[in-house]
Length: 472
RNA sequence: GGCGCCGUAGCCAAGUGGUAAGGCAGAGGUCUGCAAAACCUCCAUGCACCGGUUCGAAUCCGGUCGGCGCCUCCA
Image 1 (cartoon, helix red, strand yellow):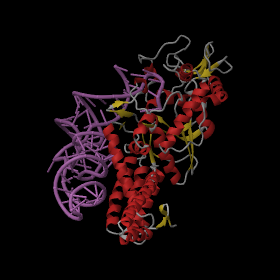
Image 2: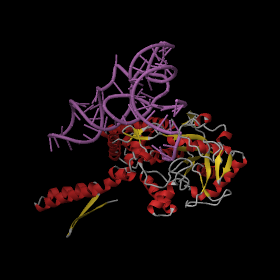
Image 3: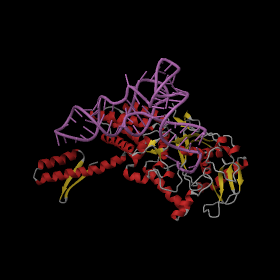
Image 4: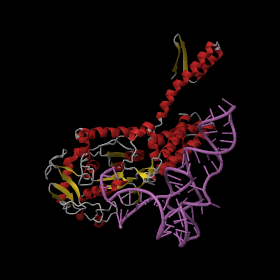
């Protein structure tokens, strides 16, 4: 039974088969690096990080490409408004590239805290201007784009498939009240591939049509196919990118003769008290602030506790429930022995592993996979209490494998805390022992030293007080 | 106006034709000097509502009500 994924283009669950067996190419639309990351930026990276880990575990080599937009993304709509980077640069009195650098690293540092591994390649729009110009020239040659006043537009009327991804009828798009009319465009539905740079525009490159800058959608068509091939496996993004961004990407790529993505995946929005989090409405949770209050792993765990195609609510109560649940899994894990003395061998959890795999293979159903782990926790605690340490140890390696390895939930953090705690606890015992020595209760003092020695902690009395170390 | 999604216990959240996962919170119990943790038991005769199809529906169809998203920048 192969993995099944929901394909947004086909609008149904389909078996996933990589174009080249054993190799998977994934392209995910990354952020426009012009401001601090919000929680909304975390869902896609976390979900795709898990997808990547799961595919690799099936023996695939995954090339994971996430772009970073650093030019061409305008504040208002596709064709008017200021460039987001340029606007921010003015505000902060920085070079646009400085703005991009700053938020680029903030973004990836934050993602790393959430356990998101670095992409294989992180292409930037400004680094692929020549490729974008080449694609635009090809579209013009194919009769799908035209130049007007130093700008180039995609001719939607010439591409009948336009609307296939978002399920829109191109002829009805005109009816939309908010499709603006701009004189140099032949049709209000047309979108910019290349924009003429006005005199004051600070981000500009030479092109066959004069100085200008690329439209927002072109970069993804170009960079995905450059690094993954004209046809590649998975293209991902937020649900709100389906239209117009992905629709336009698809039209541009196919219009240039590229088969493009074979599977489209879109994650759903985050809500706060039932309302969609929206950057433009200021209704968002700042990630840095949130991470001061909760363990990054709680955020990751909470995101995975709902299916990626469902809404996920970040209300405080919901987040706290995740924190409490994760705490239970971690403390259970910490209570299990790391190596089996005797008892049930590793195949004790075969069924659990199968259930976990079935959930993951079913369109990455992480909530169900997590439910399996809670079942394991309960059963392993029971085994532990019954003295079946082999079974508990096997559960521990299962957690290492699935909770840490596949879902990317860090369990060593708990281990480091345990290490710190060990020191404090030994110190406490030494204080009690010192009190015993003071009242000349040497039997008690010696008992403490011997019991610690049994546990592998050597105590040595020195003129400066007691010292301890682990015997390894 | 067009397209689409959703409505499952106090909260979060799976399940998409075979008789309601899991988590949090809550109640009772075992254990315990008392707690905590852990474990056990309980916690939706019902999945917004009304019809229909079916041997059988939370799941399919129709309608009603309610919430939301996209059609502008957003992940």
